Amino acid sequence: MIWFFAALLGALCQACYSTGVKKWVHSAPTPLFAGATYTIGALILLIVSVVHGIPTPGSSFMGAVVVTVAINLLATHLFFSSLRTTDLSFSIPMLAFTPVFLLLTSALILGEEASLAGVAGIGAVVVGAFMITAPGGMALGSWTSYLPHLMLEKGVQKMLLVAFLFSISVNYDKIIVMESDPTFGPAVVLLSLGLILILSHSVMVRYGPGMGGSSLPPLPVTVVLGVFLAVEAFAVNYAYTLTLASYVIAIKRQSIVFAVLAGGLLLGEENLKRRLTGSAIMVVGAVMMVLAPS
Image 1 (cartoon, rainbow, N blue to C red):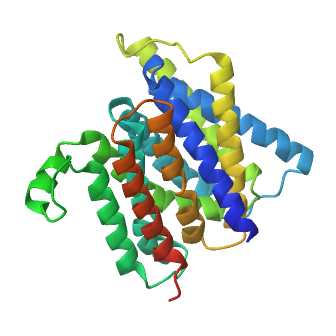
Image 2 (tube, rainbow, N blue to C red; image 1 turned 45 degrees about the horizontal axis):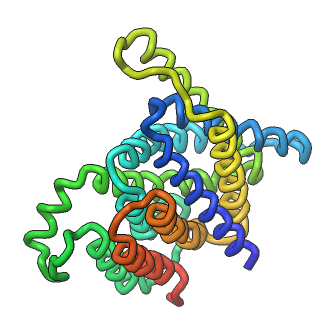
C-alpha cells in the first residue's frame, strides 16, 4: 500500500498548490507565475536526482516528454484561467472527471485494464458534479435547465477540459518515469514547462504591449509553491512505478476534498457544505471506477 500513501501525499500537495495559485493568481501573469513555480520545483528535483544519481533514460523518454509538455502547456493555461475567474471549491472538483476519461485513455495508450465497475462510479461523479455546479434549489432531475446553466460556467468548462488533458498526459508521465526514475523524469518535464512559459512571457512583454506586468507573488510564496510541486511530482511518479496509472490518479483526486475545504475555510468561499458533499461523492465515484473488482 506504499503507492496509496504516496498518491495521497501528492493529493495533499496538489491541493496546497491549487490554493496558493487561487490566492495569488491575480497578482501575476499566468506564464510567469506558473513558469516560476515549475522551474523551482524542477531545480529541487534535479538536485535530488544529482545526489541520488541521474539515470540513463530509455528510448521512449524524450518522445513522451515532448508529448506531455505540449499537453501540459495548454492544461496550465486553462487551469490558471479557470482559477482566475472561478471559486477554487467550484472548479477544482471537475478534476474528478480525469479518472472517467482515464479509463479509456490508459487502455488505449498503456494497455492498462482497470475495473469494469465504472458505471456506478461515473454516476457518482455526475451526481457530485451536479451538486457542486447546480444553482441552489435546482432539483436533481432538472437536466433541461441544468445543462444550459453549465454552459455559462466558463471556469467549470475549462477545468473539465483540463481533466481530459490530464487523462492523456498522465499516461505519458508514467512512460517517462518508467524510462527514468521518479525524480529525474518529472524534473525534465517541469523544467521544460517552466522555461517555455517564462520565455513566452518575455516575448509577450516585449512584443505585446499591454499583455501584463512582470510581478510575482512574494519570493517565499513562489518557493513554497515550487516545493509543493516537487513533492507532488515525486510522490505521484513514485506511485506510478508501483501500480496502475488510473489507480494513482483516483487517489490523487482526494485533492478535491482538500481544495474544497481550503476554499471554504481559508478563502471564505460560499456553499462549503454543498460543495464538500458533492466533492466527496465525486471522489468516491472516482475511486469506485478504478479500485472495485472487475
